[in-house]
Image (cartoon, rainbow, N blue to C red):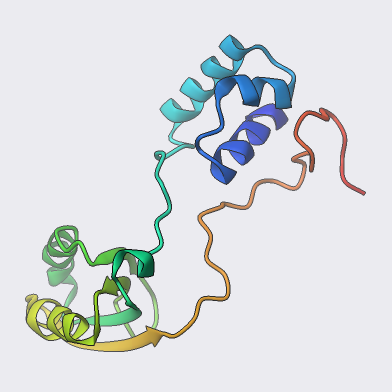
Length: 164
């Protein structure tokens, strides 16, 4: 990848609705060149997909929480991860080192729905020995932006310029 690819990625991760024409103008290439680069970035796996970032609370999911999950034995990991993939309230699932085996980011309509998720679903998965839940009261920062290399020019369209 070169600095122009990073500029394209930066523009797309800030707003995936940015058109190829707009990107071309910002990076100083033709639209067909941008289209080719975006295809290559997609094929390489650098771009995982294009989504709308929704506000859970605006859609009636008033509870967000981080749930630590402990698994009894590594033999249960595959079954656990397959089951987690089917639970829509689980937004993220990370296998971690530390006291827990996994950390989940979950959303729920209310505390009753969170209780159902914990007691009726997560704790019933074979191998789960315990969960610890931290309810999110307020979010200070939440982003999907991935930090890009520091050589990325700060302002799209100014190829070769570097921030001081």
